[in-house]
View 1: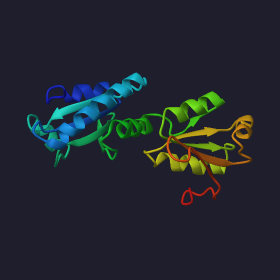
View 2 (view 1 turned 30 degrees about the vertical axis):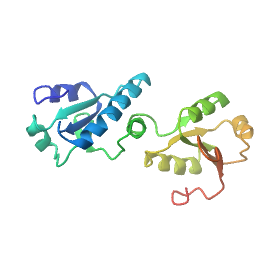
View 3 (view 1 turned 45 degrees about the vertical axis):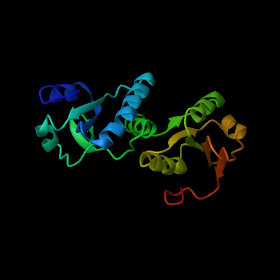
View 4 (view 1 turned 90 degrees about the vertical axis):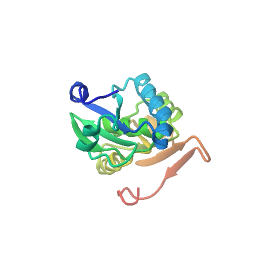
Length: 193
């Protein structure tokens, strides 16, 4: 729990931190509470050192005013003490994915079938780029930076491309529902992707 007295000290101790400004009487805050707590546990279990903190903005009004809190709950993302807007969701999964996107590389290199399968098994939706480190990959990387709802990976290994049936450059969307594997056959432009 953050207060006026410890706020700056806690922010200084963490390069990245998510802070919820809440009111004890707020119904939306009460709905967020279990999701926020689960997200904190998931991040910790994943080895991601990003605390999820809370401020009772009715008790510490000056903090709410300082950071432009107009309604409850308001979440702010702090990087090296500087506030940024949080534009993620309010469920455990959306909070965790949003934070992962902010603190981890936007796409992970996958070098074995086991790594691809592990990434796919631990996420509802994964998009994997198969190809070379070239203009197509740069376009794909650009896309990954602006999409907080999907986990991305990339494969440069030619043997893995063959294993997944990709000739040249391609994308495969893996998902844990409906048709589990969709192959993208369009152009490699940000707009088309």
